[in-house]
Length: 269
Ligand code: 2HA
Ligand code: ZN
Image 1 (cartoon, rainbow, N blue to C red):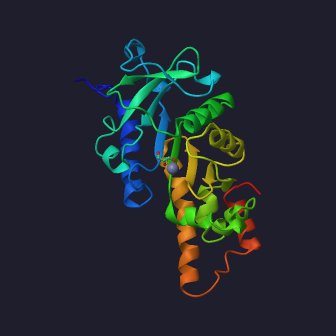
Image 2: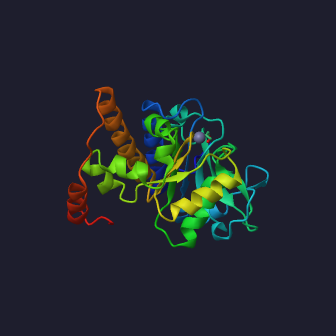
Image 3: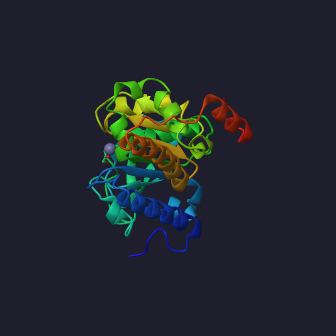
């Protein structure tokens, strides 16, 4: 069977990045069993031949009307699929879907009839939001980073920007490469429309949001950059924990050092 990736270099490169990130998520222990999901808006790679492709599934409802997604195409990790398998076979553990005219349902068009992720309402709502604000962001990643999730079990770290400031102060790179910090979404049922709505609200101020006692959700231009933002935050969490394990509360960079760094790197605040 011919893959949709065949003779489509740009699209194949994006899916390669998804597979590479999936392998990192597995190696880091952030993607147990079927944990986590990745979706990428691939509409820019869609040519006439793809537009003519027939559905290979029935029509499925999204659960929400998302007007900015009309005729958009997404690569989505499959529900119940493993990141570690997706890393080797992205088109067997994920699929390309098309949002149909009613903007409230989708069909699968390639390569296999793999049903998309259980967090589809969150992912697609976020893509709809990104398009509505003309954002250049195309990729969203949901994963279960151990140390960040552990932090979300402490109420102190769920207060606005408390975790962001602590994590930024552990090492200068974290603010440089995650300049908006970490938004917080209080615990909500996985896969729910409520979780999707709460995530979008936080994404107006942040690129990465914490789902309390569950995981994080990140958006960026491509899947590699979304992963990098989560990775630098979790690295800071690891430094914090290492210091605590050595028996002391880390000082963190001072306010002056943070200010100097923000100025030098042209960062907000
Ligand atoms: O898809 O991580 O939140 C598996 C999950 C759901
Ligand atoms: Zn999850």
